[in-house]
Length: 446
Image 1: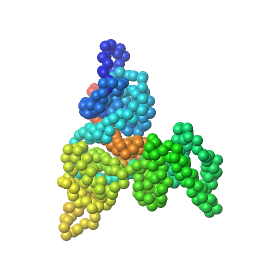
Image 2: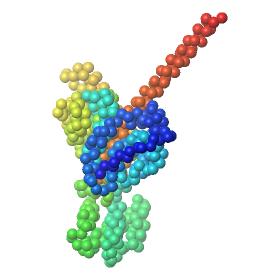
Image 3: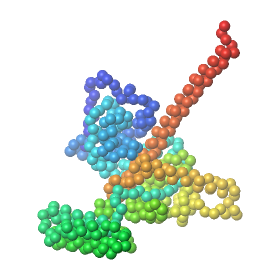
Image 4: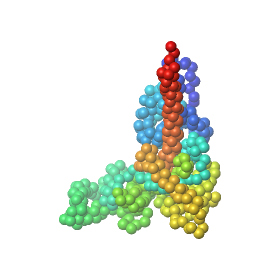
């Protein structure tokens, strides 16, 4: 249910935010440039119920989501900082300063689930519109990266210990008395598993790993016998069984109990051989650097991500790119729809002129500009580690990071334009003073 607007009967005798804040501040400018009515029209049907507590204002919740990824802070921190920052409050639609918290941090979780991927895509589309003519470039560049999930480095021993802990928690919650809890045994096995790389400890650690796996299997089977085949924990037991049965070369392995959809992506980096999460595809305009596409995948071949990414670009910008520059990981594609795919390969002097070769070389050099953009997304806009749950959380985090980058790009552009204005102004002021000094020296008034 949408909350009703509270009428403002008495005027504030102190100040309004619009009259107090610096109108040249990038966040102030951004708040007036965003089309908030688009979000009101898009999300109002989701609050059509007549019962329950009234929802928070849509502009407030959307503004908090944007600020979270714009400033690279958590749900808790964005709520705390909102009460301290006047620009945050004006950005979210307030006209007077408020000392109350805007909402509970958990309400941001519920709001993300309510609007879903389609709602986050609407925010990304608005961030593209904000960039104006810079987003109308017909030439784009593609690249993929790994978005790591918030999980520990997976090992079989860690997963088996977590299964044991989960089983003990279930037995305690359901009041089931187990034949043995293995508390002291597990403590000794943990000691035996330490320093496994030492030649004297390898055999002992290997035996301890096998014993921990055996204990996990015993507890799972015992709980199945007590609870029956149609218990509420049947999905958990199926997951535990899959983990206990998987081996080194098993396909579709499970690497986390709370995030079973994670995949292992091998990137071949020297400092990090494998990364656990999902693949993220990004599309930028080649000459201006605006993110016009951001999608999540599992572990597909890069060439198979090209067509869905181009479809998203057309959906967001309402036109097909003319050319798409990619790296050799996209090999196998030369043209998709109306878009020509440019892949680096040796030049053919018989078929290509020097001008065409020079043009292709320039396009592939410009494509490398997407690499630092991905770096900024990871370090500045929460793409480095994803804390959202499930596959939907993967896609939401990718699109919110891309939207925050586009908003930040325009804020930096406005900041530079303001600095440039004052530079020109000061230049003219001081140049006029210099001219007056020279005139007085050569033509004194007396």
